[in-house]
Image 1 (cartoon, rainbow, N blue to C red):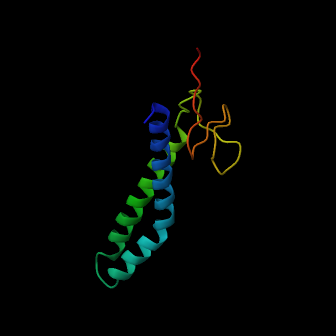
Image 2: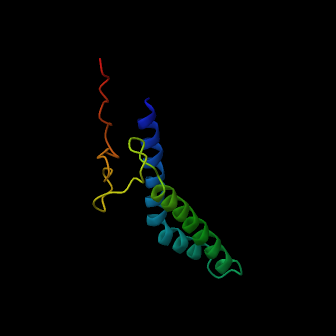
Image 3: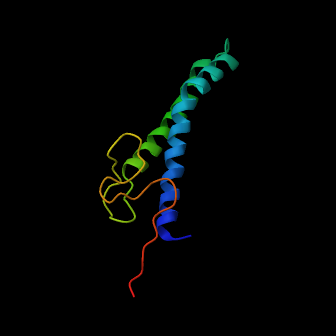
Length: 104
């Protein structure tokens, strides 16, 4: 696997982790509250579970935000909110990276 593909796989992995954490935050805390309802540990458990998932989301968000494009070494910013390609050089985040042609 070329180096660009490895770096883009890392980017996609952390992007998915952030999305999964964001989506699971409310259901996981609600399930924890329901499962521990009526006990003394209900409030601390909800805080720990919600805080842990929020921490995972925050870490994933900042890792994706600070990711450098493997081709142009600029921040991997996007032209639109879908985040499909680098705004600086056009390297696609999903799919296969374009093959670099070797001179000669």
